[in-house]
Length: 187
Image (cartoon, rainbow, N blue to C red; front, side, top):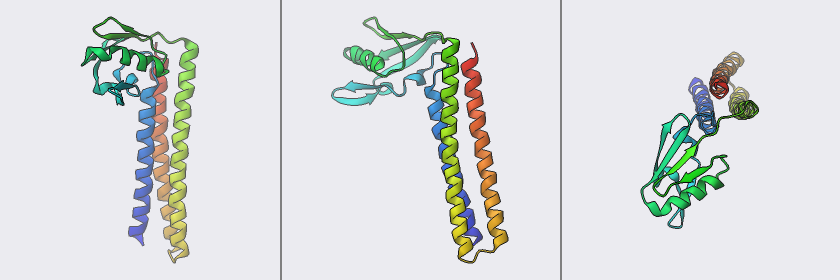
C-alpha cells in the first residue's frame, strides 16, 4: 500500500512541478520594461507559407537595456517579421532599416507597472488552482485506497504529506510572483 501512496504523491508532485514551469513561462511573457529577447518568443512569422517562431528565422539580441535588434537570416522576410511583431499585440513598434529591425522598448508608466503586477498575480493564482486540483486528485486517490482497506492512520499521514507538497509548491509560486513583481516595479 505504501508504494501506491508514494506513487500518488509523486504524481501530485509532477503535476505541481508542471504548474511551476507553466507559471515561469507565463511570467517571462510579462515584460518588465527591460529589453529581453524572450519577449518575442510568442511571435511567429509567415515563412514560406508556414508559421515559424521568430527565433528560427532570425537572431534576436539586446543592444542595450531598452533596445532589441532582430537580424533575419534572409533579408526578404524583414517585412514579414515586422508585420508579425505588430500583429502580436505586444505593444512594440518595430523599425525596419532595410538590414535589421530595431525595437525600442518603451519605458513603463506607473499605472502600466501596476497592471503588469496584477497580471503576474493572476497568473500565479491560476497556477495555484492547478496545484489545488492536483492535491484534490491525490487526496481522492488516497480516499479510494482507504475504502479498499488502507488503515486510517496511514491515510491521514498520506494526506498530510500531500498537503506538505502542496504548501511547498504554493510557496514556490509566491516566490516566483514576488520576484516578478519586484522586477516589474524596479524603475
